[in-house]
Length: 168
Length: 168
Image 1 (tube, rainbow over the protein chains, first blue to last red):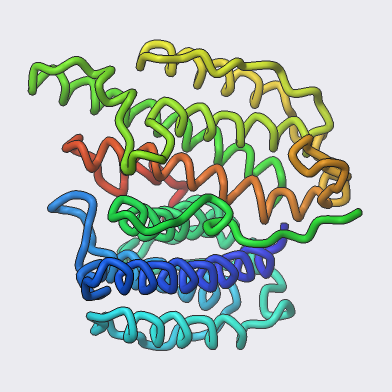
Image 2: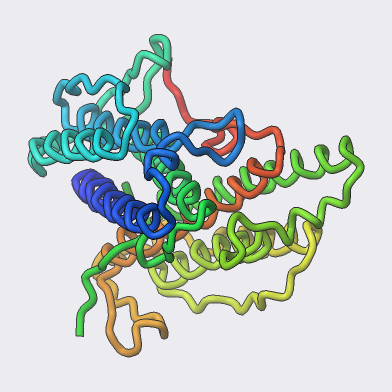
């Protein structure tokens, strides 16, 4: 599994996430409530809202692509409040992920990754992917899904994982 | 990131999960309720309980190690009902994961993985890891965490991700 594979998996999951938002929007319409109520929902009073979960999932994908691909991360300020704005955020993130090409990940496993929150310490690229990017990305994506699921949106696990390349 | 790295990440996360259960047990004691109430909790009436989420996370790790490592998967029937039994299930899973060694994953990326639920179709080993094992494992681990978090257990993201190998 290459570093490029991981970034493509993040992109696929963000595309799946937008489909969960489609289902949430349809559900809100059926129940005659404003879908952006869900944007501000959370599973515990001191946990991130749906908006923050989506922003965080996008950022985990963006920073993984930037750090491992040796590119500067574009700035995506956390200003979104609505489903419509979150869709734009996802699209901005996906557009950036597309700019990072397989060749950019050459040597990524040993690249020195020193995000500001490590205060001068660093992780090997492979360790960043394994211990930071993958668990954190899926943590936020799953929690976003769980917030919708908990509020009654008709989602199932296949919506979470999406399609996969089966062979005959 | 090797296939062995992925299995070690699953093992680490299952060990983290047991620590979330320690926190849940301490919380239940403080609040004077029976911790196994949480074992049967869920986020939506038609979603898996905590017990089933933990069983499913264990199975995702077990089958990934078995399929990618070319070993038969041991049978771990889903009979657990209590936190104590779930701890045993986690330990059984971790013991099996330890039997699959780095050398067993040689050629795993192209190994033909044909789980029964694909009804005769199959996935390349790398595709199984990327599209099935990683998203499903983290889906169930995060949902188990979310059930505890939603019920008031004092958990934070560092409990989810655990320690990582920083360098000076």
